[in-house]
Length: 562
Image 1: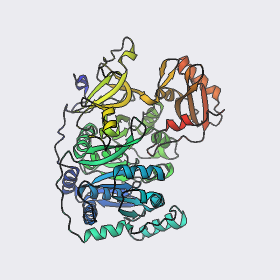
Image 2: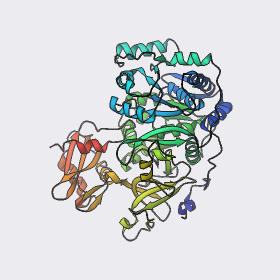
Image 3: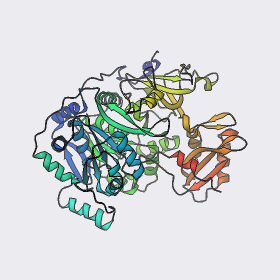
Image 4: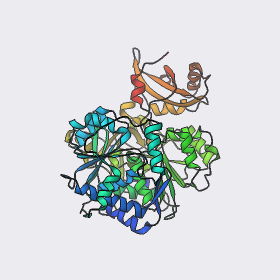
């Protein structure tokens, strides 16, 4: 296939990247440390550690893991924690020990945690003690042999470490009672590792680095096998795209998204390659606290999702922050709405660069050029990436020229490149469902235009079928969100006796006087009849994932309301 997008690439972006610059993630990490040893690497809860300190701490943790009975190269180690200094220490320690990282959402229920631990076969877990009670309930049903627990403040300096841990446990009572025999504390693990010798492990580019869990085509969570080469390729692809204005050792990147999510994970590695300081945000849902933290830094880089950007824009004090050093803001995880993008640019002076990816692609696939206003598309494929739009029989569809029936150009987005996963862990059937002839079938619906720009209309599973017509929730949400009385919204399809399905919109009001009639009138001017919401429900909050994506399935399952 012809890569028509290359003719419209931003200046300085190559058609190809070298996916084999480094042998493994530890190889990249060690070279970063060698170059930026004295520079600050990570900041969290008031403490900053240098690259040299991160290297030493992760080395100690790697040595500890190597000394655990029964732990060998290729064994899986789970991390169940929010953004803390412990996260990069554990992550790089696991990888340097030649083991595989299994990232776990700390908000998981016992059922969800048990499933992921059993499916991955994890033999060790690092867990914040706030969630140890959940682990206690399921531990006996898993293969986990070693439990390392940590308190939120464990890597802070004295006396702040004691104060934070005391307040969290005794004052705020955020740590439910738990008991796990033979669990070892994170600080004790580091001390044991420091007393041991560390044996570097030889790793290949095709060795699995992460089991990153995501929903599969059957709806059951699957572990995407992401190799060292997959991640390193995407670090190179995304890094080249966003770093034109970067200066080594001087960038400050805000990381409000959780490191256990692939978007933040790869972004962190990409920014670290430049010797950037990563400011890890433990609780991004506390928007006033986040604004306060942003006020402490002349930050130059930030990643986020639409709901986070929207939330910040509606938080007191955000518009008074110093944005003079801000260079790059990347939005992913879900579509960035036009109204949010325009308000963000007005408030900060910088555009949100909308990018697209998915866990199975490590995750980056496409992005808009920097300094480009909101366009409604997801931009061009990254270097060394092929994108093709296919129909249900896997036939390639034509590009959209601006004329004719756009539906004939709209199909499933398929991706090919060095960042595409090895497959799903222990699940050849599900792998075969999404991989065909070297292509990854993303499950996203969209089209390619004559310039090579990709537009995503929606997820296949989220598409609403109204009297035979396709309706995409993203379009509905984009229109409803432009009403000045709407803070945020989500659109889903619900059963309807006459049309098969009808559009339902759930809204969080900005204006408490907003009525259903006003929303319907607003939609009439911008949406054709079958796309207009038949059901409107007002709520105080929308159900969201840990990174802020609206959980449409929860909107769909809920009652329609009045």
